[in-house]
Amino acid sequence: MTEAPTQRHGLEHFLGDPLQGNATDSIVDIQLQPRLSHLNLRGNAGNPDFVKATEDVLDQKLPTVPNTMSANMHRVYWLGPDEWLILTDSQTLVEELQQSLSPLHGAVNDVSGGQIALRISGTHVRDVLAKGCTLDFHPRVFTSGLCAQSGLAKASVLIALTGDADTFDVVVRRSFADYLVRWLRQAADEYGVRIESA
Amino acid sequence: MLLIKCPWCGERAETEFSCGGEAGITRPANPDSLTDAEWADYLFMRKNPRGAHAELWNHSLGCRRWFGVERDTVTYRIAKTCKLSPGKTD
Image 1 (cartoon, helix red, strand yellow):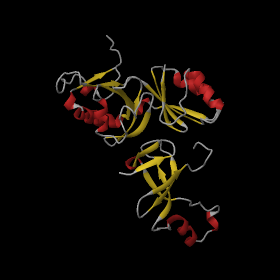
Image 2 (cartoon, chains in turn blue, cyan):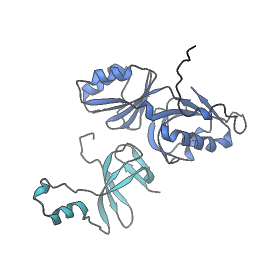
Image 3 (cartoon, rainbow over the protein chains, first blue to last red):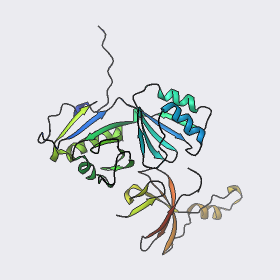
Image 4 (cartoon, each protein chain N blue to C red):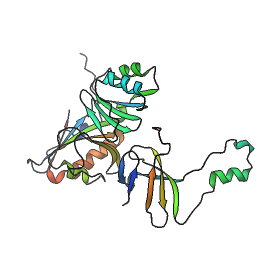
């Protein structure tokens, strides 16, 4: 009998935790998204050929305005004036981008092994994040479509608000993920917290 | 906590930044032709003014870019921040 190969993400020990606090409407949900591919894209945003070659493959806009993102088939985050992070379910995107960018000055690297995405939601999610981060999480300031790299409880993270006003995506280095989930679990404890995997 | 304006990301808390020291230090074109004293002067000697100081800062927890800061070493007031090479994106 053969056993199917299993993929581990190193955060299994958080799953199946008994619900912390009271199960109310105010509960904070932390969803681990360990299966996404993370691609780091570098190139000159001022070069129309580079932008076109990238957007043709992505089939969506490359965000060139600082602290913004675009979400459609893939999630594309602005990291710097010449750097982006792409989160995707596609296994072939990295080769497609590499092929499309090969005649141009640019680079795309698969960094999936180095970082993990968490999706945190709930009515108190802004309160939880504000406990460990200097960004302004007021709903008037941190609006949908924005992303920012900063420190969350001293771990360096990318925080983004994709659609819903109470659902944040946090991307963190795998080596900090255990610590950060522990911190989040404690920070959200007063509202109730549930940890699941996508 | 100081708010420092990154030329790309906008105003962020000072804990996101690291200071890289005095700005405007150019590596000598031909190090072999320098005396030890001149080379040491390039490597180690820095101004330590009381008042306005041009510095290099890095947005290390954010976009990780270097940029220029004009800061007063007495009051910590930041007069301005700027990109290092206008018109270029790196």
